[in-house]
Image (cartoon, rainbow, N blue to C red; front, side, top):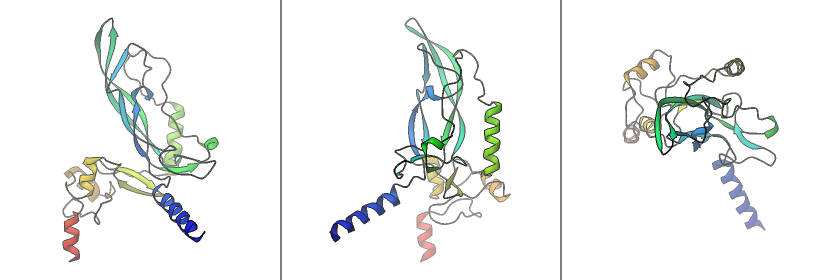
Length: 233
């Protein structure tokens, strides 16, 4: 009995540590979920999918009755992505140029009651021809919603490739999972651009969350792992 209890505690601690509903997972989402125009059977988008970060049942473990969902205070931001639009005409594909669609990218998760979950979802807008120019999804309702978000949380301005990440009410400029350009900067492999260094020096941008120590303002980069070891020795 004692051995089983020990194994249960070990398992529970692992799930609680590694399966916490906190950071969104990177997922492939079909492009037709974006806002801008409604697709029809003759419309083809390239690429057909987008890479977004999402809070859902796969992103973290919650107790019974709750689900892993975006944090309503600072758990999402809008992103505009561009697609090549083609229309099927008989057996041919005719180009209709490049158009943009809007998506919701999640940035922070928490366990929530599904009945209280009021986060915005990616959903097609009203039926609009794919041949029309892209339309901004901004509306009075969304403006009010964004105003409430700004009132609840002052968003960080981050250096290029970094994004605001919120964990336990603490905001940092960090990398999304497997975003290589950001990870190279986080690990000190690449320097920040002169524009980003200036933005940080002026206090307009927040410093990035580095992998191996604090951001070096003199070098304009995060320290590398070997540099940390040299410093310690």
